[in-house]
Length: 545
Image (cartoon, rainbow, N blue to C red; front, side):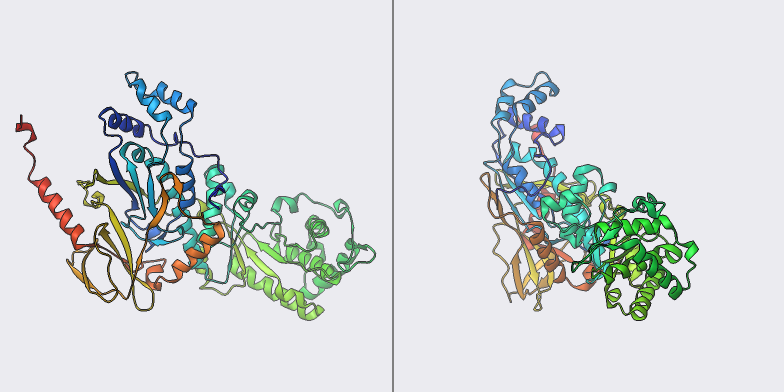
């Protein structure tokens, strides 16, 4: 539904940009160039995290921003106060009437695997307005794509079966960063979020039970109230404290645990929570000692709940050697299941948290463990190892003429001209190469050999024969209107996982992946050469009358 908001954020104001966008827009307007047709494109120069790919995210937010782009009276008055005093007053009248009705955007679908130097979003329209859009669009795309990619890497490290919980809100860069992280880590492959607002706004499954503070707030069984629980199948209320005490003695005897080492407050916390949520019982068991108190207390309460025909969920570990502890916990679960003939213990889940990083997650697969789900916060939402994607927004055409940035740093040079982007696939449907062509070129044809120039390689011309060809970008915004239904977080998540699955494993390796080939057509290569030659000849404009 194009009328629904993709984000819970307040409307992104056109003022959310750098001041120099307004000074340039004024200079264009002053020179009568503000309505010249221009084309900008958005891309990044290097794949993040030392990896071989990125996921494009943030498209829905960009489209809503463009559709709602309009300066309020107060915005214009503020600009009048900060721009130089000799700014022509008519410029502010121009700003009051400005919108994106003449702007068009083509982009890849949200969740698409993208690669360095490939322009995945193109913005065209009057020069002044498309210039004004630069910073805002970069802001909406940079972090969304980065954290989405980070989530995809965590998913690859975890493997397909282990559940991943995003719990980074408290560590995120502000409320907006927290919401953005929850939405786009879900698209990148996480299963759940702890963020209740993100759940409401984006339809992401939410989860959560208790923190250590809940456990440590109890000190005595006298604090448990009510003390009874009605069995799941009905009947008279049962004194749960007495029932659990009986089970605790049997558990301690089975495990060889000294009853006097069990923390009464921890048992009270588990009892109180179990009475409140008997079908959602998943406590954190390492507030004191896992083996001496937390685990025996959980088993006793869980056995009592099972006796009353409830189904506890499992436990959470948040400190220590998570792999070793998970193996021990699973052993105890199986021992209780066999000894007490309670099959439910076989299905309990073990959730682990504690500053989990991509590296520590990958290590789990190398060690024996019984971890079913992992909660990740800081290293996920702050993108610790690569804090910025570095997307750029570059002018490539004005008045139908190609434009190119020539830089002292060759890496910062741009490719001129309006473009079409094609993904060439092999016979098995795996991406083989992304080909950047000029928009007026004929599209590559299946089974027909073509010559191209891979970027970043000094191998010269290369010949390739595609088995399948896909045009990567489509029109998503046209004359002020969103041109396609906005994707839900769930739809984008499915698309992202499908896009990733098509990629060869050697391009998805977390460490030292093989480079994916991005190439330019012969026509772009010739155009770049011509522009460079023209630039090297210099100009004699100073000598002309």
